[in-house]
Length: 120
Length: 479
Ligand SMILES: Nc1ncnc2c1ncn2[C@@H]1O[C@H](COP(=O)(O)OP(=O)(O)O)[C@@H](O)[C@H]1O
Ligand SMILES: [Mg+2]
Image (cartoon, rainbow over all chains, first blue to last red; front, side, top):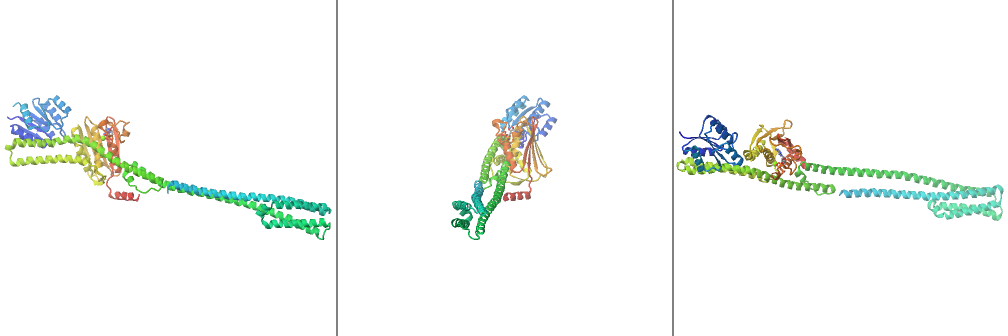
């Protein structure tokens, strides 16, 4: 069974492109523009990897990270952000994060990090 | 005419009137004095004449020639007195009186001399001599009475005239006082009006006042208009510099905001390259269309900023409050996004239109929003409440934060130019300029704050009433 990945980013293009490319790599990918819906989905299903944007309306990336860590200790989290403030990075590391990418994201780096996270 | 000249003329007229009165008084009293001199002379004459008549009486009583000699002696003395006072008598009584007096006296004395020389008394001598003496006494008494009456007349008319002319001076003074107070009050009222307009920030209306000054107050008014023009220029400069300062703040947000579309374009390009072989033509087209959308997004962000930075002349136009609020929020949205601030927006539906200079009002709202965001570095709630005044229908915009608040000591100063608690990070101009802009729109801006609780700024803007505007414009023209 392919590894399950959830992507959440309020930029539609990030969602679409990440979904296409990671699907191409052979993963099962679900993408959400609305972080509230994404949170709902996480509560209902365990994913192997969550790729989330940091700054989002309503529920932000840090809340998603905390929720995932609380519910599923095995699930890895990769965070994307356009606003890489030091505070956010430190907080993310404390919350046990797998990787942290500032935008613009290099697809090759992301692919590599995903592969590493999923141990395949 | 200058006020100085007007005062000089008034004082000169007054001085002339007083001089004329002085001359008149001098002349009157001079006449009185010379009349008194004459009265004294006539009095002397009268006394001497009485002596003469006494001797005359003695003669007729005792028939003593010596008494008659005494008459002549005293009569000649009297004649000498008359002659020595000739000048005075001529002046006041005229040559007729002088001649009559001397002729009568000489005739009288000659009669006496005749009797002494001939030692004979002609018939009817006593009767003629007495009647002649009597005539002399009568004449001098008449003269005395007349002169006394004259003096009385002169004194009483002088007093009347003096009182009358003092009345004229008083009246003139009243007129001058009325004139100056009216004139000055009128001019000062104009100036007062202008000063009030300056204090209300209506610099433009004051700066419009162009006329050629005629007096000192006009010069002051002109100086005021010049000052307003200068202030207006400086205010424009300040407005622009504060705009640049808030632009600096906005730019950090915009830089971040630009990150998203750039990241998108980058992702599309990378995806395009790596998926090239498996992409269908339609999909490739979609990729390029997405790139276009993202570039449009970038130019929209940049245009927003450029619009805001541009310096424009104040221009009042009819706007929907929703538009103004949305555009202001769009400019600070990036700022909100990179902070931990949550924006709550309440827009009452069907708000009335306002007649404003949109870039200026947007600048006010942006100042308030940025201040609120800066007051909540740890995040908080930023509430933007747009509604309407129940009483007069004016638009009310409330910008409320849950930030640090303003201390009681600082509260009265937040609208002062250059007042800032942000050190070099603040200009202290945002609120002072916002205040000026709202005043110019005949609106109102106020602040409430509780230290540690948060701050609420309330802006009131009059709603658009086309009729009222026309009347205002007409009133402006009339002024
Ligand atoms: N929402 C607010 N909360 C707390 N303090 C405020 C707020 N808005 C303004 N102030 C105070 O008023 C001062 C003046 O504001 P302003 O004129 O905008 O200048 P600046 O923001 O450059 O300091 C600020 O320095 C701050 O102390
Ligand atoms: Mg400010």
